[in-house]
Image 1 (tube, rainbow, N blue to C red):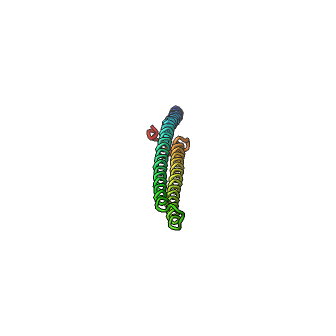
Image 2: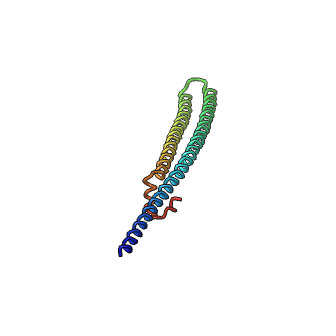
Image 3: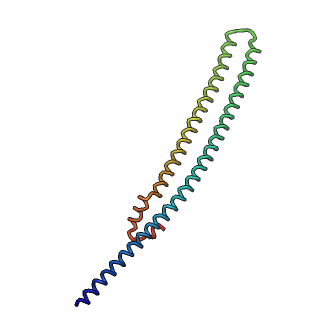
Length: 174
């Protein structure tokens, strides 16, 4: 009877020892899976960061080129308007060589046309500058949000939560 009791106790001790070793092994596997997961996510975060940085640079270059192109176009339009106004003034001075009311009215009309063109160009350029600034802010926010989100995936809390959702299955993180 004592032998049977001793065998039972020995069996329970061996079972407890086996359970403890399996728990240690499982914990080690989980820790390794979390570590592998975090390393992979860190590499992905770095890759995302580099890609976003390059995208940010490319977008800025394209936007800057677009703004410069539009500035050149509007500068050319203003120059053409100035040339046209100069030609109109020459015609006015040819038609009305002497100072007169008609000459003054026509000069004022040409001046108003020039002012309207310049004001319209200035408004357009301010709008382009504002849009450029908004776009750069938007790109910056997208970059920051993406990096913040990616950073969450490499945090130990996220990995532990993922493991808990997976129960005993460590394959989720591999």
